Image (tube, rainbow, N blue to C red; front, side, top):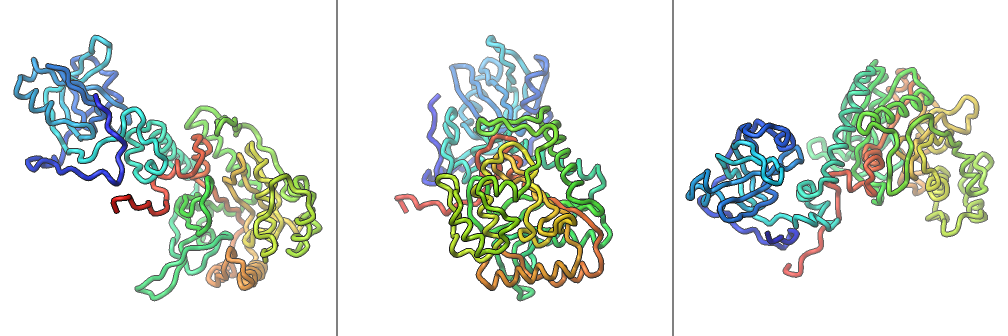
Length: 493
């Protein structure tokens, strides 16, 4: 059989012959993955896409692929169907067509279970060619732009997205089973809050107001806890108008939960148990391989003190250096690893932003095995609670794996006076030119003034977690339709 080239935007659509009309329904009672285990002679009804098709005299063989992801062979035989029916059906099929077949199972001389077709309905015709049957969709750009072709021809990609769906389903069931309530909070928000990030903005015509696409649901989830729902979570999209790389997308899926009467230590235990239970359920092992590196999620995870780690890798003591100018001078005088520099050093206006850049350039790449990074400087997160033992640090942790942050969590700040002061500091930094600060949110402060219980919240990046456990080197491989730059026009244009 002759292979056809990969499709592209330049391939013109060929019209379907006028007499053909798509069929609206077909009754299915068997899937392709189950057909192979049925006894010869069993009658089955299947529907799916033709992924292989070849004719050899008085017999024709095809492969049908359905939602199970498996393929089953089917056959048309002239001596069973009659000359006219065989000829009509065999000439009507092409790669990519959707068909419904009815027939009895039989086994070929080569031992392959096959559906001997007695009834065939062409449900819809494919107007464009399928990708090469061996290479599939080899071009990465085409894979992201035309994910439907990638799913059809790349079993590894299909399995990765099935795993993603199973991860989300398992996490929901895990939280539901532990008395957490799933809720929904606004995506359009009056203030960009809950994280240090540059937001997307939009205008609401009916209300004639500007809004921001949420960078985090945090402050709304805390309002719900204040309303009496002690344990809540949300699985949804967040949006941050920042750079794109292998571990960052501007639109991403985040799981956040909040539990009243917990502190960050409760969340450390809970998220480790959740991650381990998820791996047990999906893979039966707590060890995965990512780009050739074995990652072991089993047992207790190591704790790494944030300020100790920065001092170890740079010689800079963040306990002693507490303002942005002193930190700039220390960085310029530090013996950083070869090739490492802190971007936009001279233009930095925020101590927190500069500390974060220093950490990301020097410490985070060295954190490979799953670990808890703990006790961040208090300036880094305005919504987190200060430690009673040391008010210059936060009761906070991150889970870092292979140099990627997959979890951020802390004991929540529920003191409205301290919270107002720290948000005012954010507003001042924004006025000084820092565009990744939180905004003042009076409604949230009012909710806090009505009283909030002690609580701890956590955010887990679903895209990053799935990428790590499915050996996907970039988040684009675990998001069905990632945003891309506009395709370059073809020469014909």
